[in-house]
Image 1 (cartoon, rainbow, N blue to C red):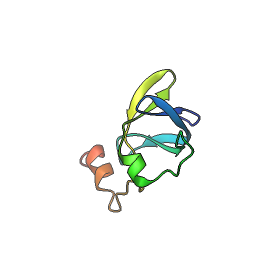
Image 2 (image 1 turned 60 degrees about the horizontal axis):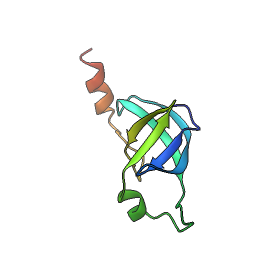
Image 3 (image 1 turned 90 degrees about the vertical axis):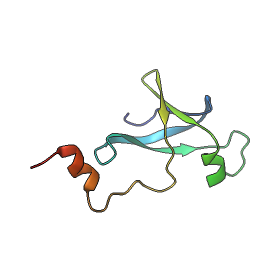
Image 4 (image 1 turned 120 degrees about the vertical axis):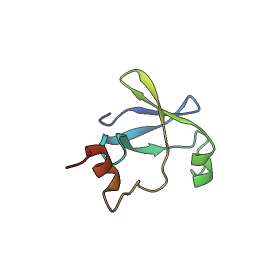
Length: 86
């Protein structure tokens, strides 16, 4: 995922990934995306939470998890657990 990928909400196009990269702290790809309401209504946190999302990565439709706040690991615990003992 690099950016430009289509974002789907319940299988319907609603947005686009603007930037994407591997997120070591999450152990998964992370994307920053813009989401539109298909009716032109305001996109609210409730609207974002009530559906499932997918991202089209090179023709492969992948499930996506929406976070309303940036996933944050201030102590770096997840990264250290993934790296293993020193």
